[in-house]
Image (cartoon, rainbow, N blue to C red):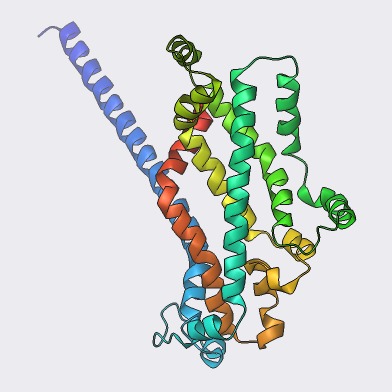
Length: 301
C-alpha cells in the first residue's frame, strides 16, 4: 500500500474515532439533560403531593397523635373525624353552598360567554376588536382592586347576604379570561364551515349550536375547570358578600372551624379533605379535554 493510501486510512480512522467520541458526548449530555428534567419533575411532584398526603393521613388521627408524631401513614384508619365533620359541624351545609354556587356560576358563565365569543369571533363589526381588547386587558386587573366598588354596589342594591347574588360577581370576574380563551378557539374554526352551513340552509343559531360549540369543546372544558377552581377556592369575596352565616361557602367555613370547634387538627384535616376531593374528581373527569384544550390553545395563540 502506498504512503498516500496509508495516510488516508489513518485519517479516516482518526475522523471516525473523533465522530464516535462526539456522538458519545452528545448521548451522555442528552441522557444527563433527561435525568435532570425527571429529577426536577419528581421533586416538584413530591413537594406538591406531600402536604396533601400528610393532611389525608392526619384526617384519620386524633389531635394527640398529630402533635406527638409526623406520619404519612396513620397508625390506624379511624373515621371518627369524618363522622364528626358530617354530624357535628357546618361543613356539609357549606359543601352544598359551595357546590350550588359554583355550578350556577358555571352555567351562567357559559350562557353569557359562549354567545358573546361566537359574535366576536365569527362576525365582523366595527367595535369587535375594541371589545375583545377591552376584555383581554381586564384579565390583568387584580380583583382585589375593584372589591371595594363591588361591595358598595351590592350594598346600594341591597344584594348583600343573598346566596346567589355572589354569582353575578363571579361571572363578571371570570368573563374576561373565558371570552379571551373561547374567542381564540372559535377564530381557529375555518370560515368555510360557516359558508357551507349557510348554503345548506343553516341559520345563525344552528351554526352556533351545531358547528361552533361542538368544535370549541376543548376550549369550553378549559374555561370550566379554570372557573371551577377559582370559584371553589374563593375566600375573600365570599367572606365579604355572604354576610348570612347560613350561606357561608366551604372555604369560609374552614377558616372559622378553629373558632367553632377549638383546635381539633384531625377534624380540620378531614374538613380540608372534603374541600379538596371535588377538585380532584372534577379534574380526573375532564383532564384529557383540559390537556388538549391547553395544548391547542398554545398552538393557536
